[in-house]
Image (cartoon, rainbow, N blue to C red; front, side, top):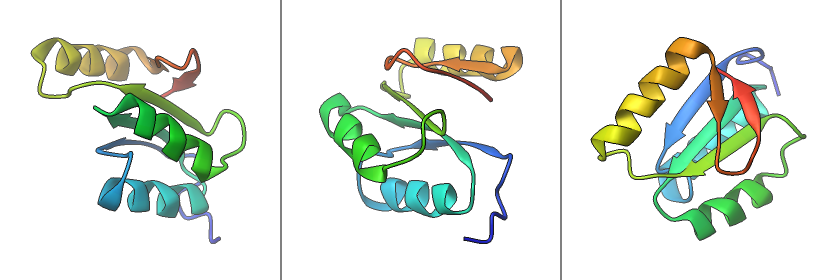
Amino acid sequence: MTERLLGKRILITGAAQGIGLAIAHACLAEGARLFLLDQDGGLLQKSVSDLGAPTGMVASAAVDITDARVSKQLCWMRRTGSVHSTRSSTMPV
């Protein structure tokens, strides 16, 4: 790990599998804190667990980002500087 992303906060959509999950693994390995989003809550929870990230490094939420209310909430979270996920964890963004 080179920690090129140490101190960075990254939001990844489609994070439960495929390219999204691969990006999550790579970013975590480089020291980034992650906020992972996916429609499939069960698969997302398993993927977060499989990441094996230290406490506080990953927050996640099962959401449909095509829903306008969700998009507005994500914008609000970015402006206010915190993410409150469905896993009851908080991470500054």
